[in-house]
Image (cartoon, rainbow, N blue to C red):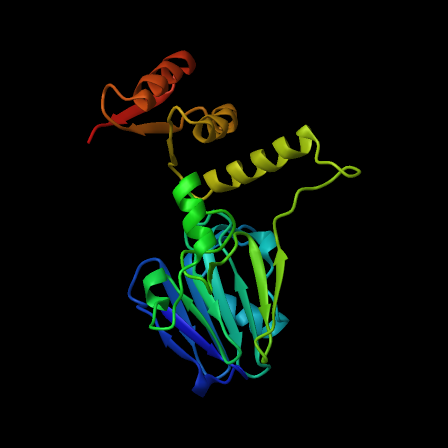
Length: 258
C-alpha cells in the first residue's frame, strides 16, 4: 500500500497503489473525494461498521470526521478534491499505521517502511543508537532519516501546499495542572469497555505483563464471562502466572502452546 500526495492535491497528479480486495481495506475514489479506511471503524451511535464511502460522505459534507463517535482500530486517509484538503485520522492502538516521508513537492505514505526506500535514503543515526543501546526507538522516527511513523490518535490536516497540522483526538481530562488517578482510571475503563463492545464474544490475552492484567481488572468486573488465552510453553512465566490468576479469579482460561 502506497499513496503519493502531490502539491496542489489534484486528483490527476496524486497516485495510489492499494489492494482493495484485502479484508482490512475499504476504498472509495471518485471525482469529488478519495477515502481509504485501513482497519475497522465502528460507529457507536448508529451501531455499525463504517465503510470508506461513509467516511467520504461525512468528510465531503462537513470537512472533518467526528472521532468522538467512532471506536475501533483504523487509520483513515480522506482527500476532498474539490476543496483541495486532506485529513488523516491515525490509529490510537498503532495496529493499523502508516509511514510518511515529506518533501516540498509531495507526501508519501506507505504501510511498509521498505516501500519508501530509494537511492537517496539516509540512515537515521540517532535511531540506530537508540536501537543499539535501548533495544527500541523513541518517538515517531524510524531507521530512515526522513521517514516517520504517523503518531497514534492524531488527526492530521493537510492543505494544498502540503502544510501539515497535527491535533490529538485523545486527551486526558485535567483537574488543574495534573491528571488525577481517578481521571486515568476513568479513561482506561472507558476505552477498554468500548473495545469489548466491538465483539459479541471477545477473547482477551492474559500474560504475566502489566498491560493484560490492567485490562483484566476492568474487563472482569464488567464482563465476568470473557474467555482469556495465554500463548507459550507450559513452563513459561506467562503461562505459569496466567494460570494462577485464572484459578484465583475463576476465569475461563485457555493455554495455547506452540
